[in-house]
Image 1 (cartoon, one colour):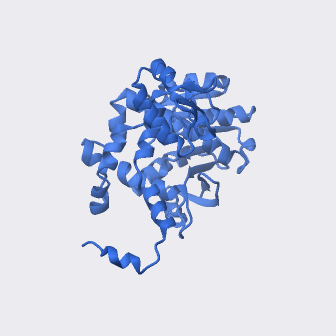
Image 2 (image 1 turned 90 degrees about the horizontal axis):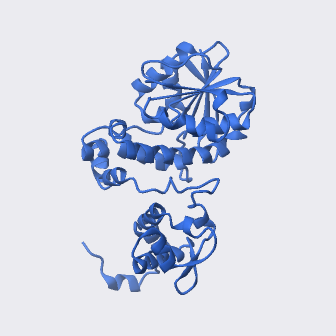
Length: 343
């Protein structure tokens, strides 16, 4: 049913809300950003402004089409056209450089399988089931395990997120009094490497599936901490590595249902020393309308994994099933630090 245009004449029009809604609903700019990232355009402008023709020739694309894409991004503050046909980096475009210390290039890549799942988000909302499984016929982790290129893309994106999360949690918790920390499900080790680099007296254990930790040695070596980190491959539903004072689970627990989450926490509990602790680093859901990254990740779980961001009470219940008790929750701008100890 369409509204009568004449009714608008008799009512005030909230143009700010209208344009804000259109901006939020836009998919053109997000896809353009991710395409330009994949082409490495920001890296081509590190030395200064260049013409579209030069950049297009360097990366092997159609210059007029590249110009159209950069022009659209420039109107959003990503790149700037300093004179017709010549573009330069802006602060946001700088973050898309490969060599930026907080580069978001890998976060802004184009994961085709994820996008295909999001195109069926309606399926998840209608049924409560996982859109990714519906579209691809297998679970997310199984899909990545059999596709090395897409698994590497995922790993690089998680490493980029880890750099940001490390900044968020580094000063929010007393990491310096931990002798050995185990990062369970720690991917390629980017987060753990950052912790070890900040604390010279700390040792680390990285534990994840064998194909996931395959590139971890290079990550550790790149920051000079490989001599203080043991890298182990395995399944955290079967066992947890012994010998750590603290066990970190970064954005792991919310990826699994209560039964599986309790199972992996129980495995950690079985090797936890009497004065040890479990540190769950992930969003903790809170009520209210305030913006929280966790509210977005909660939808990502619905589409890709089928699970959810828990609130404090739900986390407490899962921990109790593993004979652990929640001692405190420390919020940060990115994720919360949930500390738990043995009952």
